[in-house]
Image (tube, rainbow, N blue to C red):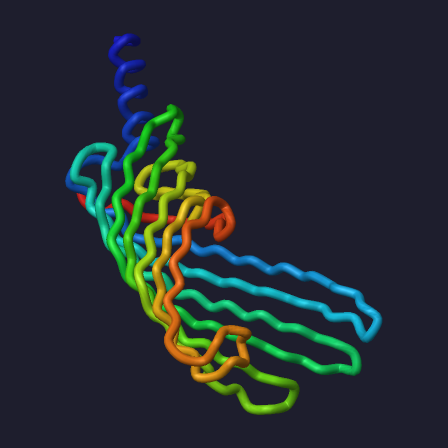
Length: 216
């Protein structure tokens, strides 16, 4: 009887901590925020630069096996860079982006509800760039679109049907973008330009996420 009770308790704990399985749907998303400041001093004035990046990524995925999920995700990104100088002059560059793509995630169980995962995704992005100088109205100076490939690791904790994660988003990324600059305000030449690049850690952000498991 005692042996049966211990086995039953063990199975119950395993069910609570390791809920994801083949046929289940994972619904949720992640969010990351970055706020950095930098001050440069020269003989003319002091320039303070501030950069804020907010990225929200809702996603839905289907577990094709007990440890592999495939799905779709949408990225909503806002980047705001502000430069302030003396006398009080302010120049702001704002970029709003929207992306949609597909991804695959393998999970490896570590025990006691913890697991690590790898995330590999491909997405298509569209963005607009606007500038504002001091009290002047905000003006759109460019648009961009292109493809992005992102690979990154993360750590996940599962309890019942709730999955809580931390990921090193865009640890490795490759992008190819076509940008149409209406003017040279942002520092880029006017006209159509194509940029292609690969980054290892340069675009990385720490993203916190939460997902709910739906299904059997």
